[in-house]
Amino acid sequence: MSVVIIGGGQAGLQVADTLRTEGYEGKIHVIAEESGLPYQRPPLSKDYLAPGKEPAPLPLRGASFFEDKSVTLHEGVQALAIDLAERKVKLTEGSLDYDHLVFATGARNRMLNCPGASLSGIHGLKTLTDAEALHRELPTARNVVIIGAGFIGLEFAAAALAHGCKVTVLEFAPRPMGRALTPVMGEWFAAAHRSQGVYLRLGEGIDRFEPGTDGCVGAAVSTTGASYPADLVLVGIGVQPNDTLASDAGLETSNGIVVDETLRTADPAVLAIGDCASFPSAHAQVRLRLESVQNATDQARHAARTILGAVHPYTELPWFWSTQGPYRLQIAGLARPDDDMLVVGDQAAAKFSVLCFRDGVLTAVESVNVTADHMAARKLLVAGAGITRAQAETEGFTLKAAASTPLVPVVA
Image (cartoon, rainbow, N blue to C red; front, side, top):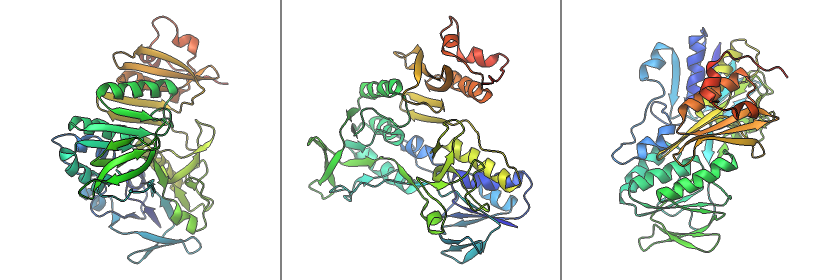
C-alpha cells in the first residue's frame, strides 16, 4: 500500500502526519517542488519583512519527522503527469505507483500582463525566494506601490510603512479585501490604513509601469492616468489554483480540482485538498475554494481519514486571520455582503466585531483586536448555537459569555 502526496506545503505535510498518527502502515511519499524542508508561508508577508527581521524559514516539520514517521520527502522534484488507469505518477526523477493519490498542489500568483510588468523591482509574494528579494530591497526603497488591497497587499503595506517607505495601494474594487470582508469591515480597514499613512486608491487599477533612469521600475501609471513614483512594486492580485496536472489527467476542474463532500475526485483513489480544491461547503451551501491554513490542515486531516476508511463529509468551520500593522483581523465563518450586520465594541479604539446574521441566525463574525470574540464565535458556530440578533442586542450580551453557557444546537 502506498500514498503519494503532490505538494509539500501545509496541506501535504498534514496528510502524511495524520496518516501515521492514525495508524497507516503503508509507504508515504511527499513530492515537493522546492528544495529544502517544507516551510510555513504565513510569516512571509508578516514577520519576515519587519525591520530587523531575517526571512529564515520556519519548517512545517523538523528533519527528524521524515525519518521517525517513515515519510519519504522528494524535495526539488516535480510531478509531470498522472496515469489514473495505472495509478502512476511520472516525476522529473522516475515515477511512483500509488494506491491513493492526494493533490495538495496549492495555488500560484496571478500575473499582470500590462506594459512594463517584467521590469526589475516588481515582485510577487508566495515563496521564500520572493520574501528574500523583498527583504533585500525594502530597506533602501522610498516609494512602494502595491497592486491589490487583499490580505497580502495590506500586510505588505504595513511592513513597508514600518521601513519608512511612502506606500501607495491601487485597488480596482470599491473597498479593500472585498472578496473576504463585509462592507462594514472593508470600509473600516480602508480608513484605518489611511490613518496609518497608506495612500489607498480605490476604484483605481494599474495600466502600466514605466522604467526609471536605471532601467528598473520607476513609476506605476494607474487606470485613471495618474502616475505614482515606484522603486519597489508588489503585485498582490490573487491566486489561481494549481489544477493543470489534474485536468491533464482527465479529472474535472472548475476554479480548482472538483471533489465531493469527502474530498474525493471522480476517481475514488484520488483526493484534492487545500487551495487547489473546489469542494461543496457545508457552511456556504455552494461549491467554493478556500485559501487558508485552517482549511488546508483541516481538509488534510479529513483526507487522511477518508483514505483510512472514513466516509463522513467535510464540515469544518472556516476561519481566517490577517495581521496588518496594529490590526489583528480574525474571521469565523463565511459572511456575505447581504447579511444583516451588527457592530459590537469600539471601532474608534480598533477593538470591535461585526456580527453577521442570515435568516435571523448568527453565521459569521469578523473581529479586530478582540481575540476573545473570535474564539467564542468559533465555539458558538461549531456548536450551532443559533444566536439571534435579538439575543445579541440584549443588554450585557457578549460572545464570550454566550460561549461560556451550555450550548444546545438549534434544530431547524
